[in-house]
Image (tube, rainbow, N blue to C red; front, side, top):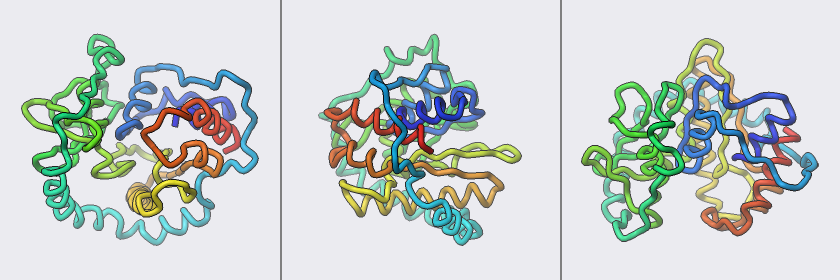
Amino acid sequence: MTGVLAGLEDAHGVSFATCDHFVGTSAGAIVATKLATGRALRRPSEPVSPAADGELGAPSWAVNSAMAVAAPLASIGLRLATRPAELTRVAALRVAVREDRERLNFRDAFPSRRTKFDGRLRVVAVDRQSGKRVVFGAPGAPYASVAQALTASCALPLVFAPAYIGGREYVDGAIWSPTNADVAPLGRDARVLILAPMASPHGPWNTPVRALSRATMLVEASALKARGASVRIITPDRNSSVSIGSDLMSDERLEATHAAGYAQGLSV
């Protein structure tokens, strides 16, 4: 995500730090927070050329056609699916959450004296007890510091311990959706860019998860389009997907993946 955004900035002369709003889930919440707080995106240490097959992750006609078909029903479908999904998550999280796992801490990286919710940033997590999606930083959301919200949004069950905020337990927002694009605040003629690393049509990792992530993303994008937004989607191209590899939690190919993303960003 960092590589793609940096490549887009350099190719098009833009700064994503000036966006009106940021919505982040899990690792995307970290990237969104960095942008919202004005931190510069990291560039590759070695020169990188644009990707020869840089792509948005699917032909634009296919995405636009899917959204055009789904848009009228997307918002209704999201509402109707909410309660059953919450109950399913509650049941799953009763057994999936492990207290003995590593507990994340973002207080040093994003100290409260310098990093606050200012109305632009939204960080998504899931309440373990209710199964409900919680959007920290949004109006009416439970109080949390940015560091606490990031800990909650990144607390992937079976990998990290849950986050405790205000006496409640929270886990990774990707348990609801890898993208959660439908919670983006929209103004008139809004333009929305969705980065979806888990929704690539290319392998090599878990095909069913990628397909489900992609379907969820398209429904959310359709809901945004139905509300009048212009939506653009970027998922890993072939080179980025190969570089990421089959283990999404591994950092062994971090530099190569960052460079592949940057090359894709330069070419989009």
